[in-house]
Structure formats: C-alpha cells, structure tokens
Figure 1: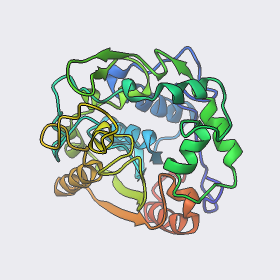
Figure 2: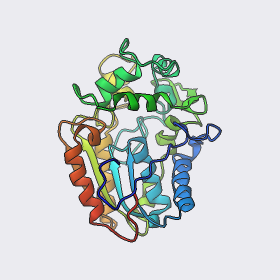
Figure 3: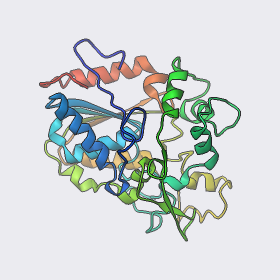
Length: 310
C-alpha cells in the first residue's frame, strides 16, 4: 500500500472479526466467505467506486475467489497473494477438491491449537513458546531469519483479532473421523472449510472474467502442498496420532488445486499469471518487496480501466 504508483488510492478495511470492525457483525460460515465479499462490495458502493483492482492475501485471497464469482463486473484486475485454495483449507485430497470424509473432518476451527488461542487472548508478545503469536510469525509465517521492520505493528494487528465461538477460533463439532473434529457454523476458520467453499463452476461461468495475478512465496509453509497447518502433514510426521494414511487422508494439494482451477478458468476464457517469489514465505510483499512491487505494479498498470483504486 505504501509503495503504490502515483495516482492510485489504496483502501484496506478491517474485515469482520478483525481490528476495528464492528464486533457485533459475525461471519456466518454457512455462507462461506459470502459475508466478507458482500462487505467489500458494500464498501465500494458506499465510496461511489464502480470498479476497482482487488487484492487479497491468504484469507483475503479466499474472499477474492468469492468476489470474482458473485461480482465479476466490479473489478479491473484481481491479485491473489498466497490465497487459500479455492476448495478451502484442509480436508480435501485431489485436484477436484474431493473431501477426505463426507463431514469435512479436519477442517474448520477445531484445528487451532488451544495454547495458541489462549496466548492470543492474553495479548502475548513474547517468544516464550512456539505457540505464541510472535513465534508463529517468525518461524512459520515468514521465512527465517526474516523479521519485518514493522514487526510490532503487525503483531498488534494480530492481537486485535476478535475472539470467541462466533469469531476466532469459532465453534466446532466432534467427528468420528480423524482428526475427530469437523467445522462449525461461525467465524473465519469455519468459513474457510471446504464444506462451505463455492462451486468453481460458477467461477468458470463468470462474466466478465477478470485477469488474475497469482503470487506466492517459494517457502510458504501455510499455503503449500504440505502445509504445516494441515493435520495430514502433522499426522504423516507422527505428531498427530491416528492418521489414517496417504490414501485416505493425504495433505491437501493446495497449490496444485489453485493452479488447476486457474487453468480451467483460462480454458473458459479468463487469463491468469503465476509468479513464485524466491526466498519468501507467506508474506512475499514484505519479504521481497522490490520484486513484488515490480510485478504487481505492472499488472495493475496494464489494466487502467476507468478507476485507479485498489
């Protein structure tokens, strides 16, 4: 945002469940990311912006999938930065997003480590535990030894996450299938479950089709074909008992799923470009800002359209 070319205006709202967003407004996970997509377009309407460049990172990237399905005419370009798979996060096993179990066990809020949530609730700014928010950022989010210049600001933003059974980490349901938890109905983590993911046939049928830039880091441990946050990855390492094996519950091929969907999007008349930024983790625009900005700025300049807002 701080390095945008002259003439561009950046708008970065706090989404439901985060920061200064209205704490009364909750994410109805049964709608997937529909609430957040509707909020984004409502903001454009409020500001009188007909069309804009849309950028989504991680969870925000999942919102962009929904926006391109529900509101394709509102966007000049789309930039997906290490987005969640279009089939949601965890619990699917192939390029079609087939669930490992019919109740989508292994996805949703039940995956969260209880100590991590407790430390988040306590405003922990320490490095005392591998489950503290700062430790997770320094070891799993960013590629070590990178530490951002605005580390304290980013940590403060993380600690401003709204917490509870209807927020983060949300509610969950016990399951008879490994890892014995399935998604609930509230909050961002449940909204990311493949149980509530949109039908990608709607993306292929979208009209008009927005040109997509997909950027991800070469060392992203979160959005990966072997995500450190995927129970199958942990189970295969012997750290989560009862793992049923690769045939029943393999790690979700997140990157391959995204690539397959974007290739089908191209076959249906759309266009996309994939860029892998080397030596970067889950925040490529912070870890490799010069390379990121060169690619991103070119993308939006090639699609000036009627609006220069982002």
